Image 1 (cartoon, rainbow, N blue to C red):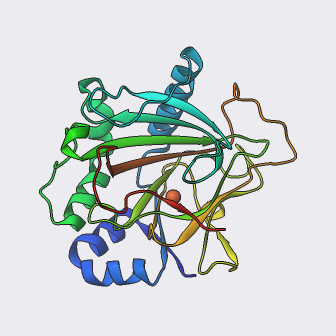
Image 2: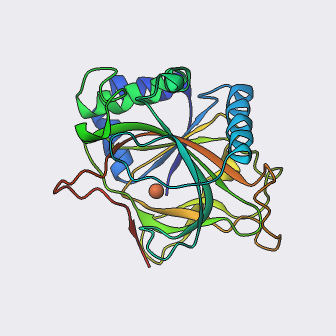
Length: 254
Ligand SMILES: [Fe+2]
């Protein structure tokens, strides 16, 4: 798989001025790593604040209906999960004013998603679940000691023509083995993405490519109270849990 390493300027130019070619390359599929899309210190602060807030409150889970609060949840091989994983996930919703700064900070990613969907800038950010599509900033932490996510594909929709993952960990310092990979086919070779990245880089892949997180430092023991392992920040527009006939859930690939 071709992994393109670009500057932010080159990437934005490709998205906005060479859109057809960009989408063709995503669908091929090629991966893109955009160097220093975000400031390393700000991303680290967001990660640290998320971790600290998580330590101060109990994990819980809430379906995505109106009134769904921001929450965080420990996934520990939950048998009914669409995609099995061991991770601590934190969910932030665009409809809460208290998240305005966070969503403003990631607005360039939401702008790209709206642009590729053909919808006006700022669409969906403030939506509530009964409007079907909502904006979230999801933050995942795959802990050292075996944090992972099974290989899977995500649904491609108008709002998810690309998946955008902000690197929030230092490879070889927060963790040394495992991490994000993509495969070209079911039994295909894993292409490891993390060795090409630094904190603040943006990873861009087709949602439709088989991808996952290989066990993070599996020889260690998990400690949910340590801020290390593989952290990622994903600004995303998703379908709420109100019923629809769309294919909206990710699917494991065995
Ligand atoms: Fe995914």
